[in-house]
Length: 570
Image (cartoon, rainbow, N blue to C red):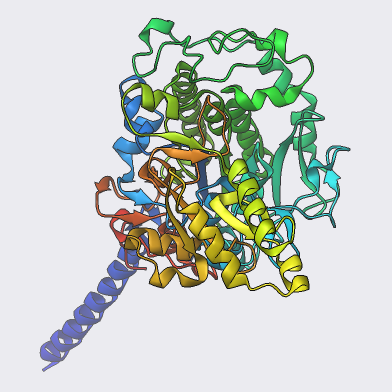
C-alpha cells in the first residue's frame, strides 16, 4: 500500500514536471524567433519594425535607366537593389501633369493632385488668379542664409504623408529628416511634422531650412556648411569616369544640336572645367553629378548628427537626388553627360548603402528607390531618326487665344496662364464683365483642337463625356484640383512637349517616357523578387505604411504591393 501510494505521488510529480517543462519550452520558443530580416533575436513586446527607412527619389529617372546602363553599374548600387530587393517593373504615375512637386507628393502621400492640392511646381489659385509656388510660405524666414530661399514650408500640402503617419504612430518619437537640393524635394516628402527638411541655397552655398522647423541650424549642419563642400567639388572639374568613346549608350559627345552647353563654353562636351566656370556661383553644382554626391554627403551627416537608426522607434530619412533632373533638362537622355551622371550616381548609391550596412546594420533598415517623373527624348533627336516628335509653342498659343477672345468679348488677357498643359482663365475679369465661362472654354477648346501638336483639349468639368481613351480620362481626373488647376487640360501627341528650347529635354505629359518610373524595395521586411503586373505611384506610401504597421496617409488612394513584403504573424 505504501509502495502504491508512493508510486501514485511519483506519477503526479512526473506529470507536473512534464507540464512545467512544456511551459518553459513554449516560453523559450516564443522568446527566440526569426525576425522579418531573417536574423534570430530575443523577442520583446516591441512591434517588429526596421530601425530606419530611407526613401530615394531620383529626379527625372526614366524606368529604363535601370537597364540602359546596367552593364556598367557596380554590384553595390542599382544592381544590389535589383538583385537583393524587390522590383516593380510596371509602376506608373496616376495623373497629369508629371512634374517634380506633384511626384514627390504622390510618392509620400499615396494621393493625387485632385486631393493633396499640389497641382504643379507652380499653380494658379483659381479664385484670385495668383501664381503660387508649391512650397511658398511668406510667413516663415530662412535659417542658415540671408536669402529668401528659405521662405518655404509644407503648408500648401492638404494631406498627411507616410512620414507624418509614422510620427503619429510613435507619438512623435520617430525622427524624420528630408534632404534635397530642391526645396520641394526636401520639404514635401518629409511632411508636416518632420524634425527638419534641408535644401541647398545658391546664394550662400549653404544647406538651409526655415523657421517652420527651427530657429537655428543644428551644430552638425553648421559644421557641414563650414567645410565649403560645393566649392571643393566644383574645383575638381567634371571629368568622365571612362574614356568618351566607351559611352556606347549615348550620342556622340559633340551633339550640340540636341544638348545645351554651359555658359562660358563653346560646346556641350566633357570634360567641363567647372573650376574655371563657377566663379563663386555655387548653384552650378546642381547641373553636375557633384550635386548628387553632395546630397549623399549631407544624408550621411544627418544619420550621424541625428543618430538616425539608433532610436527606440523607427526613423525615416527622405533623400531626393535632384542633379539628374538638371543634367537631363540641359543635355537630354541620349547624352554622354546623362550616362556619366547615372554611372556616378550608381557609385554614390553603392557607397551609401555600404555606409548604412556599417552604421545601422545590414538587415536593420529598409530602403526604396523611385522617381518623381521621367523625361522625353529630345524632339530633334527623334525627328533625325524618323520618329514623330516636335515642340509646341504654348506661349504663342496663349497669345493667339487671348487675341481671339479679345476680338469676340472685348476683354484683354482672358487667358492668364498655360502652365501644366492647362488653360487658366482670368476668373476675376470673367466675373467682373459677366462673361459666360462655358462659352469661353468652348472657344478655347475649338482653337486648341486645330493645333497640329494637340491630340485632345478637354474641358475639366466635362471629362467624363469626352471622347478620349480611358487611360487618359482617369489621369486627367486625378490631376484636376478645382482650386489649383486650369479649366482645360491639353493632351499633346506622343513625342511632343511644350515650353522648352531646341536642346535638352523636359517632362510633364502622359506618355510612358514621362510616367513609367522605377520602383525597387530592399532590406528589412522585403522579399527578393520582381513583379510585372501594373502598380502605381500611389501604391508606394500604402506599401511603406503596411511594412511599418501604421495608418496610410489621410489622402491615400493607393494599395499595398503585398507581393513585395514578408508576411509574418506578430
